[in-house]
Length: 160
Image 1 (cartoon, rainbow, N blue to C red):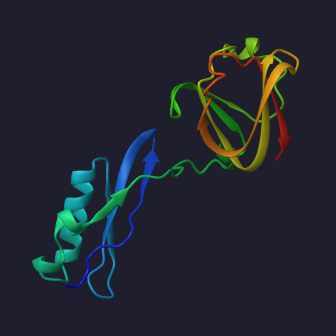
Image 2 (image 1 turned 60 degrees about the horizontal axis):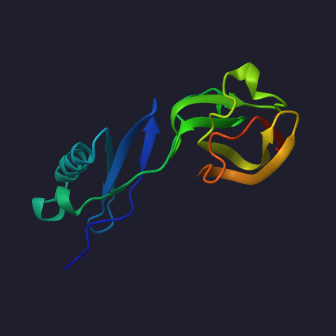
């Protein structure tokens, strides 16, 4: 039997997950997106049905998963470290684009639980103000602050 699926992508839009699903019967590829996986599967199947038979356009055979995509055209949105108050980049957040010797003025002292660092950047988090105390160094990407959640009081950007 001919496979009808190919990789798919989902994205975040306005802090909500959206799903993008694809079907690939033969040499055609169809893609569509929605806020729920079921809706994205349905929409891609409907798109596929416009030129293929239902045998090749089954919603349950669509491939769907999540990733992140910025819906904001503001170029500065990718030029800062984003700190979050909950695991997995959830909850209250702040953006920091330069060294921050003291988180007290941001009302985020000892509140960081997860973070997102722009690709190519390197950041060092410190447990005390003025870049003092135990430190934790991370490169671009997103992660939870396991082992030092609710403990960070300053941050230095080592590489942009």
